[in-house]
Amino acid sequence: MRRTGERIAFVLAAVVLAGCGRVALGISKPTGAEGGACTSVGACDPGLVCLSKLCVVLGDSGGSVPAACESSTLGGIGVPDGTVTSASGSYPPGTPDAAVDGDLTNAWNSGQYWGWLRLDFPAPTTITGVHIAAFATPTTDETYTIAADSLSTPIGTATRRVPAGVVPSLLAPIPVTPGTYSSITITINGELSWVAIADLSLLTQGCPFVCGCAGRSCGEDGCGTNCGTCPAGYACSAGACI
Image 1 (tube, rainbow, N blue to C red):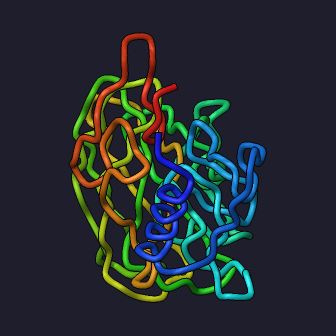
Image 2: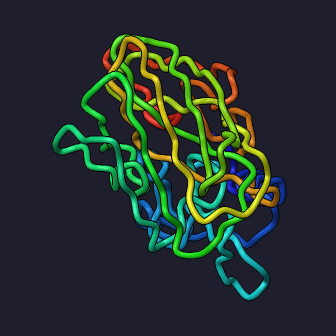
């Protein structure tokens, strides 16, 4: 086990690498609280992010939380509050809002092998990519095509392998043509599996998804690197064995 001084230095280094900020450290802080451990799915209380398995506040020296870098597991800025979701269809209870609620334990399910999910932002939003956590049964190669506003040409497209499992898989980020958009529509060809998105986050130039296994003990890092496997009887969820 790391000594306290080494742990503090490690966490501070992680915050600097993530874009600078402040860490509130304490003793026996509640899970999800500032300075406490992240939950088993890498979540923290509102306004906090999970870095190196601790819930911290990102911001300036005054402690304000910026609009960027609020999505701990997927990186990026999450999805702006007030975003309206719609979809080609849904298989109850997997409604479209489940794909943007920051909760990896539920998902939007299209109810078929194809589907689209539309996000209408409350204000034009500048993005450089989209990061998705998805489910599949069986393992399949899914194609994601991202359109924006009324543009006739997609701003991004990629094929990603989605492993079968009872917990979502972090896919490699999907880059898009950098720009400011009022809405995006993600069309998915699920091939052998029904389409299901557990969560997604918008990536920006200032807040991309950083690849790597820091703070992860299992599963892929979202960019193709395997961070380890779980013992028998445990499942990997957002980098932690549960």
